[in-house]
Image 1 (cartoon, rainbow, N blue to C red):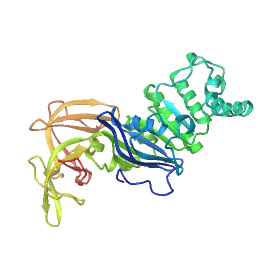
Image 2 (image 1 turned 90 degrees about the horizontal axis):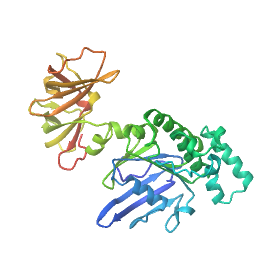
Image 3 (image 1 turned 135 degrees about the horizontal axis):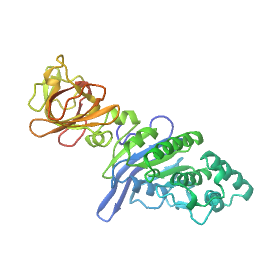
Image 4 (image 1 turned 120 degrees about the horizontal axis):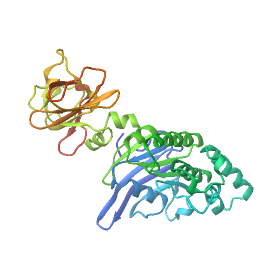
Length: 370
């Protein structure tokens, strides 16, 4: 799915069209189009400075766009202040009030909406049970762990039954084990409650694990929008291939091969490409993921092999990362099963790849060509 394609299926719950946001001469959002269906968890993924948090803040109403429109359930958000949008927000800094108890923190949004005390108490109790903090209602934030504070923030955002849930790097302040636990909890609760969610992260593993769809952003633009598997396995742009999973990059030359196309990597022999190629001749960039390289055997065609010297070998549990120096100075990384007999540093090694797993991108603009 291309960046500009609307979500298929039901009418969008959130619709963003032609959004532009500038800070002086700097364009932070460059005509962003994006939709989310009701109950979907849509992740904005990208490096620092790509525009993902700016987009979230425009949706929240904290920033005003220069161009473009925002609609929720068919209703324009133009002129609607943040406090009137009924959006829940979860921040990376927890943003809990230190002078309020856990229950008072969670009830804060309900009080602002003048929900009757008895109804608010029931909703707070249910929200705390949902995030497994039922026994800590009277505790104050300084007595809570980081994960518990984030659960308070999550309960506070969800207790108001928001029309849209906005989450800005909510797990970045937690340790690795707790991040995995919390992302699973967030996903479970979001699905259970059916809340449309816009989730911001720079962590590609987190995005792959939690999302219905991912919008990969670079320099204020959406480079690709699609389900996690599609974004990882079929990146539409070189930036997406590099940011989501990482790749080995090699110079390639595309050639006509009868009715089809062939490729040559470095100075090696040409090999036919199994898929259609948008531009069958000229320079290209070839990408191979670490896991798509393996130790070559005598049966592997030389054109689909790369030979070099082992620079390092790092044990990573079930897999080991081999770093290879190729002739001419290029480096290559391969993740190989640790159970295999692996070469020592300094040894010459031949790695093989399947042409069907090769990703080819334009050397000029990074667009996908095969």
